[in-house]
Length: 105
Image (cartoon, rainbow, N blue to C red; front, side, top):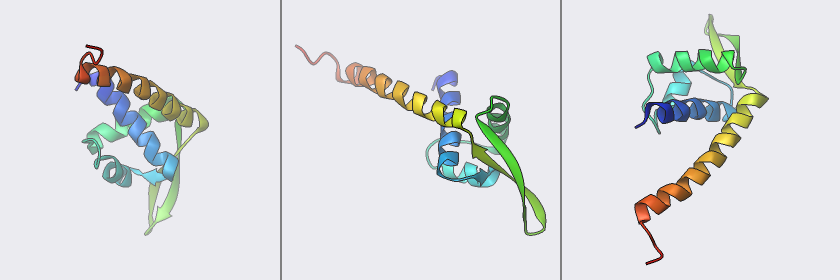
């Protein structure tokens, strides 16, 4: 898969998880890995990049005596998901054409 497309898919997948509920690293990996391979070494740079781009924000919660870092999506992150979905809908039409060939014969 194209590296840029994979990166976009991973970023939007993380944001989509966070649209459903605030979450923390390990849980995000579990949720996203059902659809696309992701590891800790991939996730945390994505989270830092999304935070720097103001698409998510983080906060800490005490869990079993330790601080756990949670992430929540921002309005900007929500717009990114919506825009990406629209782009992929358009791309799906092209993909259908490519896979289906010329249907007008």
